[in-house]
Image (tube, one colour):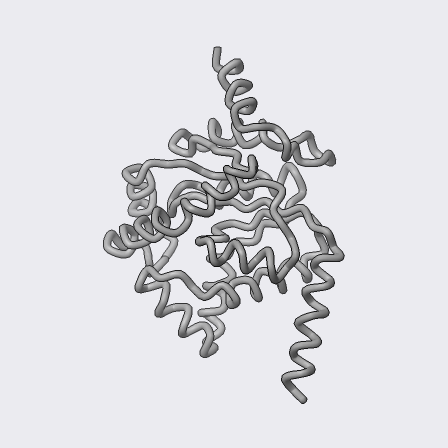
Length: 226
């Protein structure tokens, strides 16, 4: 009976999220590419709720649950956490936020994540914001920051780079084939990166310009630079 009740609750949660018809932007980029900093700017100026898959997973680890222990071990080994675990945490946070515009940071991290998210939530992203940054720059940033992160050591950092290249780039390629990728040169100073980010979002209180091709965005940025 408990299983039936749990299944009913899960179905209700899924239906509620679909009924919300949320605007979702996936935010992808290697570790240290500056996603979190730029998401904070977007939240402030465009009214989005920022959901970091990594933060939600770390909160679960701190809870001391059996699920949290499993997540901790996988992260230390540079592995990808099972999709259903992360989707459940994201879905709960979205439903509890009271908002209908979301930046989902660091997810989906592979093709299985992507297909599972769309299948479970019945939601597709408006577009993917991809922060493109060299491994050398990301490594420098990660080693110089002091956030108390256990996974900010050179060996684990390089494992995370490898996982990103092997698993996340196919997701970016998939959405690029659908015209949904907005690529940002994230190797520049924070202020310059945000100027490019702002060019992708409509003025406050207006809809996201999800249909603008990435080439048009870069042409605009080049005109500004001239």
